[in-house]
Length: 326
Ligand code: SF4
Image 1 (tube, rainbow, N blue to C red):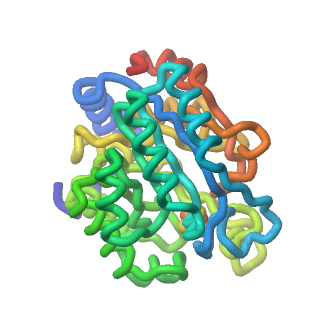
Image 2 (cartoon, helix red, strand yellow):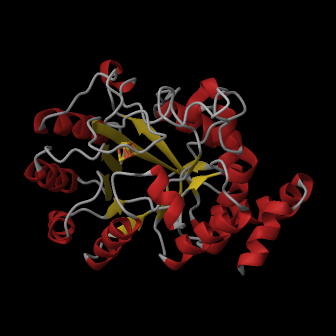
Image 3 (cartoon, protein in one colour):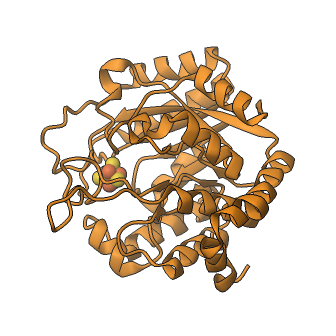
C-alpha cells in the first residue's frame, strides 16, 4: 500500500471501514494467527530514569510508590505463569539502569529452560553488546517502540533520549538477531494522517514481529495530562486505533498486534471487554495475563485505569469474537 492509500483508509466513512477493511483484516487474522495469544506479562520494576511527558511512571512522578522485583520474585511469577499453562512471557519495566543485567539474563535462561516458547523483554535502551547477551540467554523478542516516526515530535515528547539513539537501539536489536516489537502512539494532539501513515509504513519497513500500540492516553499528573487552556487532554481516537490495527494486520499478516485496547468507557482501561473484543475484530491477537500481585499492580502506572486481567478475561474475549485461545 502507498502512503496515499493508507491515508485513504483513515478517511473512509466508518460504515465503509466496517464493511470492507475490517472484515478483511479479521479474516487475515483467522487464517494467519488462528486465534488469540495469551501472553503472561510481568512489570518487574516501575523505576524509570526517563521523563516521557505522557507516562505515569516517568521519573518526575514523585508521588508514585516504586518497586523492584528481585530474581526470586520474578522466577516465582514466571513459574506460576508456566503452571497456569501459559507459554509466552513478556517481562517489562521502566528504564531502570540500576536493575542488575545479570539477573535479567538468568531469568530469561530460566524461562526458556522451563519451556516458554517465546520470551519478550521491554526495558528501555541497552548497549549493542547487551542485546547480543540477551539473545544468547535465549530471548526471542525485544520490545522498543519508536513511538513516532517524526524526529521533532519524538524528541519533544521523549526528552530523555534522542531520535537517533532510539533508532540506533532498534538497529542493534535487529542486528543481534532478536525479533523486534515496535510501533507508535496513535492520535496524539497534532498528529496528522500523513504522520500516522508514515508510522505504519515504518512498522512495515522494520518487519516488526509485534505491534504493542495504543492510543494516546497521558496519565494524570504528567505534563501532558492537562492542555494549555486547563482542560484535560483528550485521549486518542479509538476509531483511528482500530483502523491502524486493520492496516497493520493487512500489511504484516504474521505480526502480533496487541488487542489490549481501551473501549468507550475509559474506566475499563486496557482490559475493557468491548475495547478488547473490537480490537480483535479489527485484526489484533495478543492479550495479556497480568502476573503482578495486587499490591504492585496499581503502581505499574504507565497509564491511568490500568485494570488487571487474567486468563478468564482472555477466554471471554475469545468467546465474544468466536476465536480460540491458542
Ligand atoms: S514510557 Fe517507558 S521510558 Fe518513558 S517514562 Fe514511561 S516507563 Fe519510562
